[in-house]
Each structure stands twice: as C-alpha cells, then as structure tokens.
Length: 173
Image (cartoon, rainbow, N blue to C red):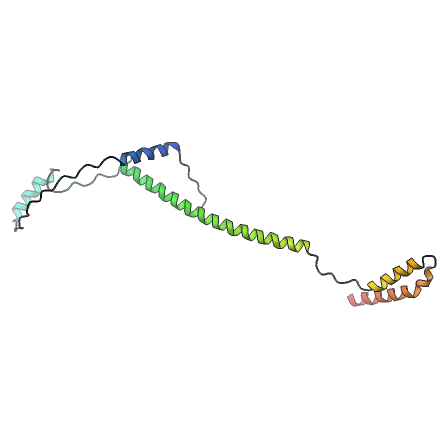
C-alpha cells in the first residue's frame, strides 16, 4: 500500500454537521390508501390501453410513477454519498493503522531479542585456549625471583621452557 494522509478541514466538518441536521427533518405522513375492494380484472381491449397511456403520460398525478431525480452535487443525497465515501476511507485507514501497529509490535520484539543477543555476545568472553608452556614459564619466573643475584642457577629451568616453546611452535606450523 502507498503512503497517504487524510486532511479534514473545519469547513467539511461543519458541512457534515449541517447535513446531519437536514437529515433529521420530521418525516411527512404517508397518504392513506383507500381500502376499497378491488374489482376483478377484466380483459381490456387494445384501444382502451392506448387511450389510458396517452392520458397518463403527461400527468404526474396519475398513472405511471415518476423517475427519481438524478443525484446532483449539492443535494443531500450527494452529501450522504460523500459521507459514505469518507467513512469508508476512515474504516480502511483504521484497518491499515491496526496492521501497522501489529507490525510495529513484532519489530520491537525482534529488535529487543537481537539487542539482547548482541549484548550477551559482547560481554561473554570467548573460550580461550590456555597458553602453552605456562607451567615452565611460571617456574622460570619464580627461579629468577629467587636467584636474582645468581641467574645462572636457573639455566636448566630456562632450557625446559625453551624446549617447550619450540615444540609448541612446531605443532602450530
């Protein structure tokens, strides 16, 4: 569906209110129909039918019913047609609004879930492999701390650490 908007002016509202007032006019009482017993139908000859049709054609009071007038702009029926069109547009726009609100709720829920997932991934540390030769490194450091004045005593610990490092590099490559 395309984007659209409806602007209702104060003038239109006033016209609609006036139209409603015009519709609420008191109804005229219907003329009473005489309840005389109907005479049985008899066969009429063609001449009587033609004569009757000639007299009834021009007279609005008797005979054939008049055709209702056409809907002209400015007449109350034209206003009611406009009202019906406006009402149908309003109903359609309400349906579109409900659909958009449902879509919005779904989108808000999806965005909230994605944000939660991203936040959880950001603050979780990925699994880290332990550093190779960590024990040898710690032994080397503690030896240097203990024999700070005589570092040659840590030569064997240092060789173990170097051998371990070499083996780790070979495994990686």
